[in-house]
Image (cartoon, rainbow, N blue to C red; front, side):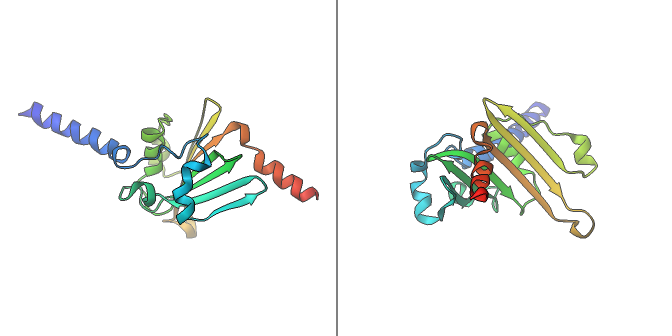
Amino acid sequence: MKKIIILICLFVYFFKGYALAFSCNLSKYQIGKGLSNFDEEKKIFVYREILNGIGSITIPIEYPCKETEANGTIISVFFINDKVVRVIFDNQIKKNRILFNIANEVYNVGFKKNQKILDSNQPEQYALEKNNIYYLYANIKGINENKGNFFELFEIVDKKYEDAANKELLKIESQ
């Protein structure tokens, strides 16, 4: 009987951990995907050129995922030469560290949580580079008058284009 209970508990634990991956297809939110992959999103949400040659579209996670633990998360996708060069997930609604889970379960980033930081209620930040792509995660908690507020961010950036926006801003500023 104990073995059956342990097996059920393990099954529930693993199923819960991968529930987002099964119910949510985020495969198009990857570096290098073409703007043509977002034709449906462009019909519904605003695609705009934020700088010369740099476009952006912002989408609620409910659009690709319907109903998940990540409800309330915003996805911003940035394009250069009609290719995805940056993806930002922004969560200010749920305090369940869902973007940390998305980073590790959907994108297989491999962030390791620092329990010492979590226990001391300090800001949590991680960064990794894999195959010329930066993966950044931050979970910032408010203090003093902002206590109770938080900001969770997961960002994927193509290293080749990390300075493209800065270069364009400098060019505009010098004119």
